[in-house]
Image 1 (cartoon, rainbow, N blue to C red):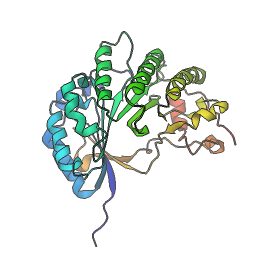
Image 2: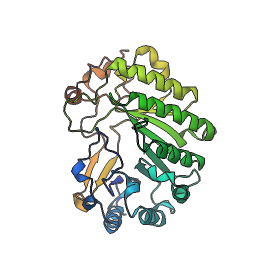
Image 3: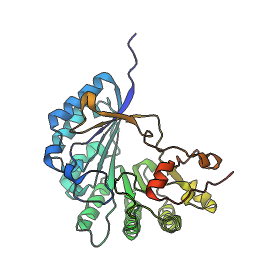
Image 4: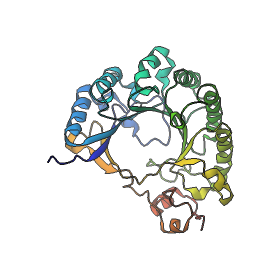
Length: 325
């Protein structure tokens, strides 16, 4: 009897280059150059290497922005021909700012990956942290989202809260509610989702950029949740301790999806430096995202992962106050 293969999820970084320079990005700016791009041959060999040893459940192209990778179309064609169209890999994710999708011809090409009729589950995760008049890509960003919505793509928007972009995020959510009303009101809840995050990757120590006081966060959360729930748009929270919210808001929390960090998945992270047997293999919850002792008295502990004491101390989070049973 053949031994059953372990299930893994591949996270491939074709490039670290990006159109923006978000202050909370965990990628060292020195890494954002062409020499740190994976070659197309390297990517193919890495996928083949892990396919022989594991059962690949999902594959994600991350970065940087994979749409800036010069061989993105040959790469997508390879994935479709060898793994996706035959359902050898059932879940495919691409994380991008999606500015390239301002071209409708490119969007037409992407239909076979992120349209609702694919045999596999393909989802385009769009970073939407910059959405202000000062954003030089604002109109291009809007056009790209509109093009994708017209095609009915599965879209997952990721918005990262900092002290500096609250008004921009609220404007972005307002824009997304209008897009949803026009194109997604009759779609599945998994076809259009908004995810809110607090930053969790940075070497910037106590800069004040990352931390929102709980009252400040709550005010913004109310505005955003009211906009989304009015249209019944799915909302997800990640990296946000629920103790930031008030007990009386529990009725709201029942309508929120919680993306847990400590989940039983093996993540294989492949980049120029870490490939094949030297790829980074770990679980999502390995680096400190777990319930702290006070969380065990909270009535929401099954929904929220809490955060580690080290994380609280490092980033000056306010003391968590669990919602006691």
